[in-house]
Image 1: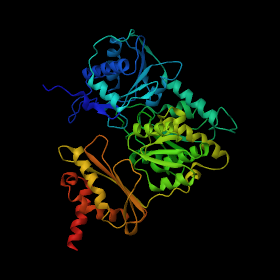
Image 2 (image 1 turned 90 degrees about the horizontal axis):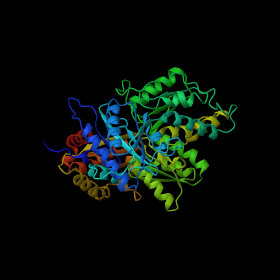
Image 3 (image 1 turned 135 degrees about the vertical axis):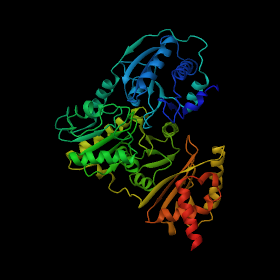
Image 4 (image 1 turned 60 degrees about the horizontal axis):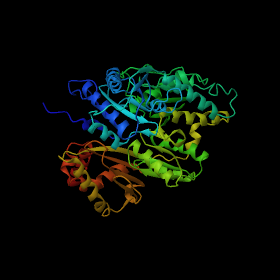
Length: 516
């Protein structure tokens, strides 16, 4: 039997695999593999982080069905290696990091068992120390060192903790302190009806233990109970079905605001009383507007797929936008790097809703992002305003789309890089296409003339044999024209476009043009 390669479980700066076997998916997060991962983690703590003697690790999980099994395997192996463990039970990813900061727990490190918004049969692990989340190279080290050759630590006890309750109280305290001029400082959200959609993940506490404590009416909040089957919708603020579910609840209950989280609460989005969504570019614009009031001139670090209109919006408020590579660790590390280099940056945020604020340890924390926005919401409300006032001048494109081009070549990375290397030369031959000079990922092109004001970006997926392509245009029909203009280029790469939806579209354009 061929030995399993643990490295296939790496997903950037965390681990993901199959936690429940299905007809189509073999179990990869077996108890044996979990034990090896725990060994690699022990080696990493000792050899890379310099820990020894009495070491305490907090372990928590979201609502996934395989969480208890994986947690048990982790705890058993960690304690057998002399690690003291705090079993936190149901938790969120940002709360698990905070276990390393709260004096009540004083954990040296933390593990969060989660696979974010992926289907129920997936699971994974995220890793933290007091200095922040693990990096790509750290995960590689753990997976390449699955055997412990010596005993580094001298404990092995297991305790339980109520981390989520501690984290909720902390948020309540911070929100109260951040809202000025409330009639009742202890219940500054009194008179507001705010609905939470937790998608049966770990975020239900935000309704009952945070918003209700602050005086908000949470009637109509839905799917607060943890259920790893995710029976109602995918817990994902970047998912249309999930946002439609939130909209229905907001309108049906006459709520002032809606809040939605992903499974482990490191991402979030909002919705106003009209059912207008604040996710993706509008969410980035909203938090940018808030932060630029507090920190004039700060740099907003985003991923590479944000709109040109967002850049105009940020610059109109005196700020700067810095687009960087996709991946929450990438944007966070870039914001940290900018600060260290003397360029103030208060936030790193992805289009997907991952948002990490400098004032909050540069931790991607969906609950803290909502808390920060609620502080401004409460003050605007006392003045007769609304959150929409923060982004009234944000322009939205007439059309936008994203296609995923599958790479069928054996070495998909080399094939994809070849496509990206050759695209700029083609772009220079098309009137109305102009290469974006300040770009850190893939090939970004600005459009004008017959294509309308817009842009497109072709890049490599971080982990899959896929090339995502984002397109926006301010002109109705502009996206179609951009796709048509790109058809001759993509027609050269049969192994890229053979099965993709964009290929079918481009092929139809090609045949139509040929017939005419």
